[in-house]
Length: 430
Image (tube, rainbow, N blue to C red; front, side, top):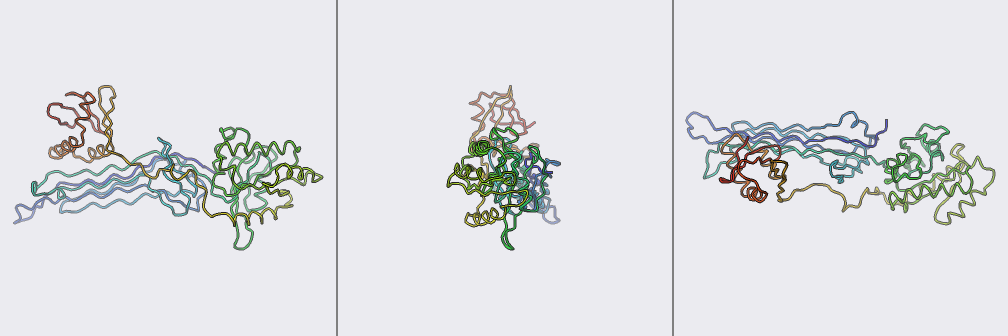
């Protein structure tokens, strides 16, 4: 089954916790802190695989979590970092953040790797906090939570040539005639409901990939007839072969040509400028060259017209050799989904603190602060005091006062809830 879209949840592994420990050795009464660090959590990585052609695996499983790092131990033993979770995806996948719609990555090469959910850093053990002022710290850090997000995976076929045209124009018959692809073929519209790929071999060392794109209809750029799902696969192709049914009347042939090209331009202006070759199909069903002459005259010098019969193979070879020569003159780069400046490869946070009020709860939003709270042992008095100093230095107290927080109000930072005390400028963990 061909699937070209999937929604998945990914979560990087949490970092392992640092520990509080002290040397307990005979004849060493003041051994000092010896708590080791936790290991880093594994990241979730998407990796392009040229051997895959569909996103079907992600239809049966949608949640992916990397392992967390191992906790630290005494005697300065650090926890083991977790391995990354690598998910293989087909070449041509566009990765989007499901909440914002921003593009995270465009996977266009075999072996290309993209980190989509970073693993958390391991927490530091108490040995890391020893200083001249505090030679025996009794606190450590928890592991940093791994990143988590929902992703949309959209597959856009990577093909050199895309066959376009209205339903029943003969695209499936043509791809079966020029390659080993065997799509379902019948004499009724919308026989093809999923794209098909075929490899066309011109010589021993010369071949190219053709995609049979399901038939477009008027309004396809607005989603009519699943048009958006079909149009998406045309974006990657370097050359378009427009298959026209020459058994229609001269007026219908031109109107059909206009319909498909209008849909291309409405969807993406760049598609209207892509090299386009005309495959005037079903010439075995006409008894003269009048329609071919009419088509050439109407299209002018801008389009190369090849009279063919996909059913009998007539005229197909000249079309194939022309496409091979045309592709040889075009750059090897894959057409990008969006301009480079529109892509988002990483989401970075700033120091801005946002205070939102939800009923009687004040919600503090800032990724760095949320991470710091999550890595604090809230049942450790010394660790909490250190957190209070950090929050005050970052301006959280002042921001809460400006937002109207008073003693007794509830404060939420990430997944943690606190009571606010105005007079002492401190938080008490619940």
